Length: 410
Image 1 (cartoon, one colour):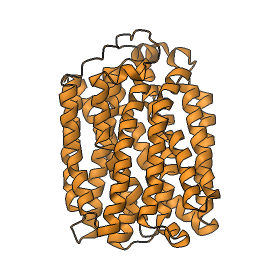
Image 2 (cartoon, helix red, strand yellow):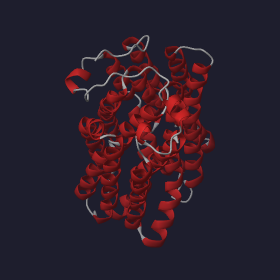
Image 3 (cartoon, rainbow, N blue to C red):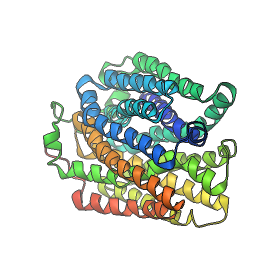
Image 4 (cartoon, rainbow, N blue to C red):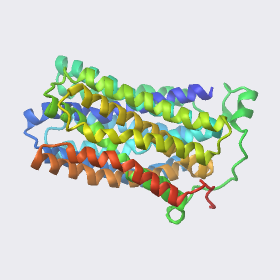
């Protein structure tokens, strides 16, 4: 049953990234039809990122308060309605409003998923479970170009937003039908329940307050780990179609295979990063050593992307981006798992929400930075140099703030 829960989380992540990626794929089309500049587009991304950060202030705590089943369902329902609302937009302001609403709803995706993993998986399986569901983001990124191309060519770009947004309602129905806490589920066996509860029991506690979180160095370890690295993933997600169009001269049809390669690499990295730390744990390594070794491997694997904008070989550039995307997702699987390593289950969604907030603050800065760099220079070189160094900086902060991944005292 716990793997069925993981499958539901996988499909939630898939739907999340389908709705999130549509606008990036349609950027060249909308720039022509609506007259957007790179700075206009960066402003729309900035609004989404800001809303995602604002949502992180409250949605994680809301899920902790309402419970994973109801809180996560409400989040997916809200963002699905918001995704469809893009079809009614015709101006920069209207797109920004729809994007703001989408950001508020999608802020619940990872806090809800990480909380579900903490409820349904023992510590030794959480990293691989997180890696599996997180790979759904890459499947969404692989599937979306095909779906968007077909819907846009047959029915126009507005239907691309409607069709992808409507999928979320199917997920909500399945989630409400199947998800319960392990103790309440009729589908879990006594043996599986014993495995899920094999870790020492967490003390009962109310949702943790933000004023408490900001005093805990373990929360800042998760938060700064995401502050430096989340923005890099958003560059891949929102600007990669532009990179392929600008540098490699590809249209929407020509992007399908390169995007498939990039996000297939990301899927492999997501599962591989989670598998690596879980495998080391099973071999007797400590939680601290296994998580940080996996994160170091991922941080080093990102660095070759600094060459991607300099090479004249299109497929070499695509492969370097694919390696970096896979390394990011492996990193992400482990940074999320740190929250459940250092905090009790009742605080996990709030901690992930705090980390997501810091990640979106970094994302807001890079959204404007990328827009101005491209508007003035047309070059991705400085952007990829930043991407190649961010993870090592983030890992240094994690090590300083949580040298042994001690449990937080709340």
